[in-house]
Amino acid sequence: MQLNRFHLVITFIALVLLRFVVGFHFFKEGTYKLKNGFDAGGFLQSAKGPLAPQFKAMLDDPDGKKRFGVEIDEMAAGPESVKLNPELTHAIWEDFMHRTASHYRFGDPELVDGLKQQREVLAEEIKKLQTQSEPTKDLEVERAVAEQKIKKIRSQTADAGEILNDAKQELATWLQNNQVDLVAHYGTENREDGFARDGENKASVALYVDSLRYQVGTIKSDRQKKLYGWKQEIDGMWTAYEGRLNDLAVKEQADKFGTIKAHRPFDQPYSQLKIINKVIPWFDTIVGVLLILGLFTRLASGAAAIFLISVVLTQPFWIPGTAPTYFYWIELAALLVIFATCAGRMGGLDFFLASAASKDTTAEATV
Image (cartoon, rainbow, N blue to C red; front, side):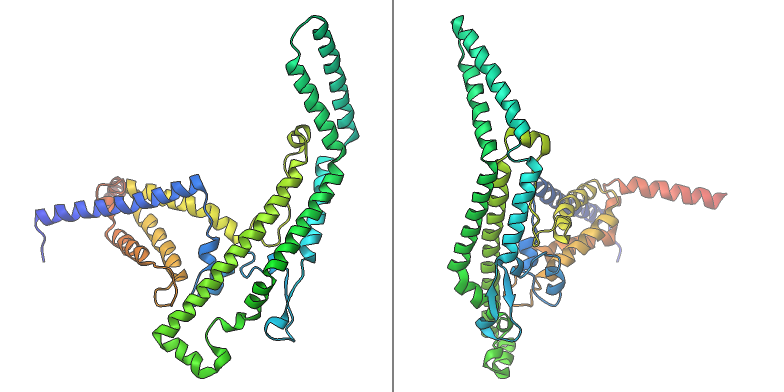
């Protein structure tokens, strides 16, 4: 079948428009993530299907056990096998308190002496200005600030201890308030994949009867949402504790030594999740620019297609309770069309690259 000129023009316009629209979407997604931040944790946590274990392995603490101090007794069964032990968190918090005190030099006598000298100099200047009937408000404020810093430095060690005790009490209260739900959650982990507790027959029914299958999917989804909420609350405690200890430093200490971060066993600085969160926004942005310009289009569209395949595999549409991924499938099909048709050579910079490569090949053949 031969296409006439009109059909070729329509095809040309359609492919250019398709490439531009997909590229613009990737570009907007990437720049939005760069501006507002990006966290793939929730998406990976909710992954379903045969590849779910691989996706969840990218998380530092996918089941939350490190955060909540959950210990499972393999010799017991059900809720009786679950124990909440916050001792590891207490040990890390106490270590961080000591590291913070050493980092900022809490109670530093040299800094106190320096501030005392500054206070005395300011006092002399205030007296001098008062004898001259000059305004002293700014100097009085500065002297009061120096006095507050002296008091704060002297009480830093004691204040750090109080902050640690407050954090421990907050965690204890939270664990007490959520103990029943946490024990129920971790004590029934082996049940969420079906109705095994009621026998193999009902487990089989749950797999093949739509209504029950979707009920199982809903239960799993609800469990993950609740787990994500618990994680956010515990993470907030860690962030607040870390911030309060850093806030004990006066300006001179903070400027000289900088802030210090707590070691979080569930949030490693160079984890796979951290790398993903940094790479994806730049990946989306670069792919978008390349598709808009029609530059290295096959490489960009191929890489983007592989990325979208990984996305849709986290939520296979044939698995109950998955998030809708139809839009991703549509965009994946569009990327495959762009890849197969070399759409960058149509109204894109790849046209010039292809022309240059063709001339080089012709020249070599002539020689």
